[in-house]
Image (tube, rainbow, N blue to C red):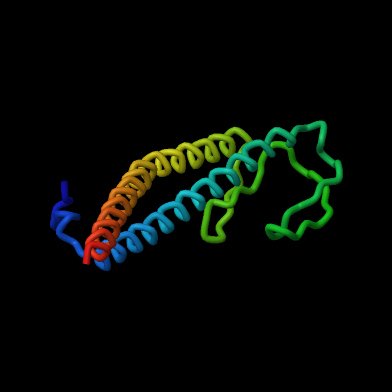
Length: 153
């Protein structure tokens, strides 16, 4: 069934070049969707790592040497000065000071939100894969029929 604003096309009425174009278009859409899914999963993993790192911040570690991340690949030596609050990157270069409990809840909300977004995206990815398979099978059938027709001549 077509979405509102889209027309439903019978695949059997399409020519092999049209089917190939449709197959290629579905490939591109699948690539975009899977890339989006990977980005969401990557962000979710980062929030999970941040949430897990909160467990190491406790009064017994105050004053101990740590590596402080400045970028994704650059760390500088430092010492844990406070075990009661942390700075949390809340997006677009802004940081907020939060208690450990608030930071943990913030990361949990972000992780849950990303999971919801991935759950919404998954059916679309599956539908595109199924559509691509149907188009591929129709293309194969048309190519075989054309080859069979050519061999009879």
